[in-house]
Image 1 (cartoon, rainbow, N blue to C red):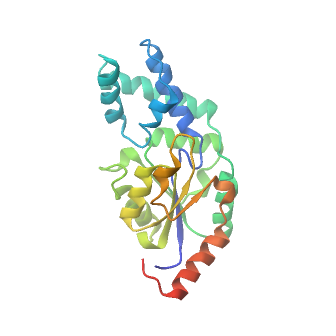
Image 2 (tube, one colour):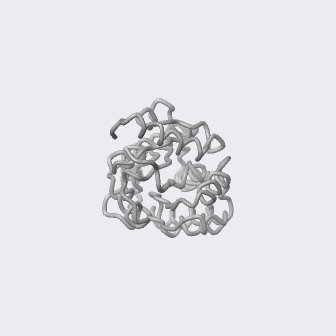
Amino acid sequence: MTTATAIIFDMDGVLVDGERLHYGAARTILAEHGIQLDVATYAGYVGRTGRDIWEDLRARFGLRTDFETYSARYNATLADLYRTAARPLPGARAALNQVRAAGLPCALASSSRREWVQIALATLRFGDYFQATVTGDEVGNGKPDPEIYRTAAARLGRAPQDCVAIEDAPAGIESARRAGMRVLAVRSEYISPRALGSADRVLESLQEFDLTELLRDDASVNAAGVAS
């Protein structure tokens, strides 16, 4: 294990209150079909792909709309929500400022589409914090496959084992772990705390993020000679 030389953030549920927007978009569209989507049902879809989610919804509720029609409606609705209703999560900007002040390279690895990511980053003025961004529509295999995190590390010019990932969902945690990274998890109202158990550490929010402490912990582990 080496001391972290780069930080890679997930976006929705970590930096941006994006799950609320995704839920809102899905709820709006399903309401047009006379279906009420509750939070508990939606929570079971967090971290899954759009097509996978829609096929499950079709089977669950007997929907006849094809994925392409649903996807176009969902994309437009969600893009508008990112533009008008995106909000930073507690501690997000402060955490990004810590990474910037330390001079560490920083990347974004989000399962969301490039269009949504660009809108969210512009809305919240987060874009300048990242030297690299990788989105779900730019990789062949989504989370929990490690491709997105390996790609983000490569774009930063870092080995995966030199990066720390910050995630909120089991699929993202697994993706980063399989890439060879350490993982900090941030609790989310949509994810059971038990599902975050494979992370190296769990934070209640990014308000608890302390880069100095993180790097000090890395140094202590290295001095003890513990291998990753």
